[in-house]
Image 1 (cartoon, rainbow, N blue to C red):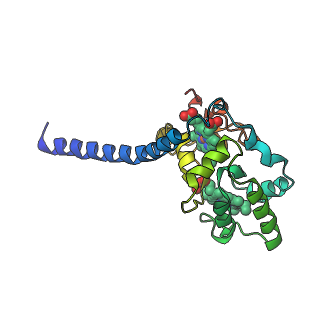
Image 2 (cartoon, rainbow, N blue to C red; image 1 turned 90 degrees about the vertical axis):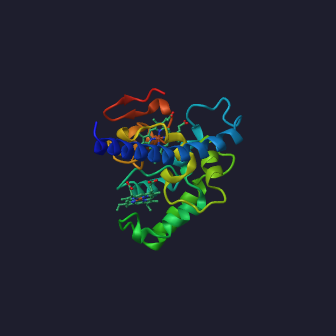
Image 3 (cartoon, rainbow, N blue to C red; image 1 turned 90 degrees about the horizontal axis):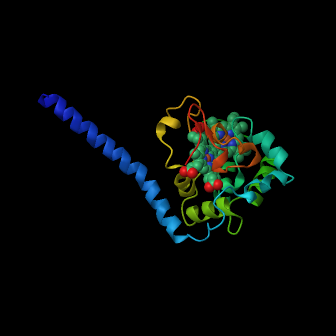
Length: 199
Ligand code: HEC
Ligand code: HEC
């Protein structure tokens, strides 16, 4: 092996290590969070019944029509109130798209989101989301909370970003077959091209 190929290998090794460090940072922050809240999870390991409560809210039909045409009408409990306020306050520049609504419709949806947002004492997903975002700048994406990252950090990039059947974590319904019903139990997960998720 000559000097050039050795230095190339070293460069690759450094790059891979750096990527690994970034990925494990989220995992570690979440693990700290998990340790602090152990016990709250006891007996509630699978699914979360309260995650589908928003479906029976009178505002859901409108929410689904207006916010479910470009992507899944995301489960409101996966973001806290300040985050939804941020999203609803900037619909004209919505992740590169224009998702503007008339004032009355926007108000109704904002109220629906506030009623169903993550908060304390509402079940595992809501509680986890609320705690992991409390006291921080409210993220505009569900996929950017430490809670979300903690639940998904074991899934390799080749199954998500590099997977033509998925593309990004924002496409919940690509993997969670029950996403429309508010069902995110890991037993209902099937990753396109890889089959059922078996932890
Ligand atoms: C015109 C299409 C369109 C409409 C209508 C729309 N969105 Fe979006 N939304 C997008 C795009 C594009 C993204 C970025 C998706 C990505 O990064 O893959 C996005 C992302 C999001 C995200 C972040 C998802 C994540 O990554 O965690 C939230 C939250 C969201 N939208 C909420 C809403 C709400 C609430 C409404 C209704 C008021 C709405 N959207 C209506 C196009 C739309
Ligand atoms: C690439 C496939 C994939 C995508 C896309 C995805 N998830 Fe997941 N999700 C999983 C897998 C796999 C698990 C189980 C992980 C584990 O057990 O280690 C999971 C776990 C979860 C959990 C915890 C389930 C429980 O009962 O503990 C929630 C909540 C969740 N996902 C919500 C979402 C939401 C909301 C979105 C979209 C914003 C999303 N996921 C996008 C694959 C995905």
